[in-house]
Length: 226
Length: 279
Image: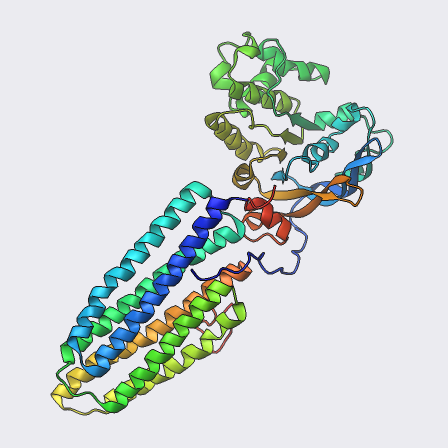
């Protein structure tokens, strides 16, 4: 039994899951800043990204070192590769939170449309749930739970489409138009966060089954991914 | 720290279909090799394919070397050794009546763990097997071709009459490979061919295997799993079963394409072995 190797794998995974917790904090901070029109909180979210990046680089370095020294195979190799991908998905999710925070700073003096704020809260809550489910399924190697992410993502996608329709209907008020354009990007960021959570679920599936596949095929919607 | 669930093997899938496009060289069928009454290996069934490197891996005592020695009847030389079951070589039972073990070993050559050149010249080491098998025409040409195939020619062409024992360990092993291929066998069996060599010499032997498989079928026993991962197209994992009497017998656990064995083995025992959790 390669004890130190197993310890390294365990440490890498727990660092990855901690990174996931940081991403959840970033997302909650970004949404609170948006809803409360709080530019200071938005700044904190932007600065907080350095914490996520630190974890991200630590995991990258850890994986590089482990690959160079331990030549993992079989389930160990799959775990290392799945962590490599998941690490990137988490880092990208945190970047979307930074984008939301930056957009918030640009329009905080404009009174938001309460319906849209409600929609963003719904999307963000669903996004948080998806990240939790994705990380949990990864830690527990639970394929069935990972596959539920597809349905969860569907509701974010629907909310995204509703937001776009609503913004298109805002009319020609220039202030609202600028706000609306910014908020379309916010909506897009939240929608992408859901996609990254699904991608983490796909890494869980790879880890468990050894097969690379997408849960859904974006270029052939409605058909099961091959 | 979040709890990590126990390591699981990749979920078992449907067994893969036989490989219709590959030519089978050996069909091993329910093979057992016994010393006296105790089996060293038993119940081994699988096919070995032409122009591929097939690696046999497994913990010490699992019968890897015993198995590979069955493929060219090398175990005949061990008193008390016998086999049960069948090894069909292109459909013909290697242990059938009227089969000459010497001829078997000509078609199915062997390279051993320790380089074992004769204390003769480099030239004579290669020429000896040719003379034994009556391949005396164009002896010089055959010796040169064998040394070239073994990637040794350039290093020894100016000292063919020099003593083979003056070569380095890696060169001696390549000389033994040259000796094995001089008689133009179909199969080369290699029993830990690089375990006594340094990393550079090991790399040369591994490169050589890649070259040689275009012309020959290679079966290699190795303790070095990374070597199996690097050189083999197919990998067979043998392990030990212990019966209630404490009798330990080697069995074939899993046989598949090498990438499969090292990324998603189907059997938990294979996974435990290749990941270093057992053995």
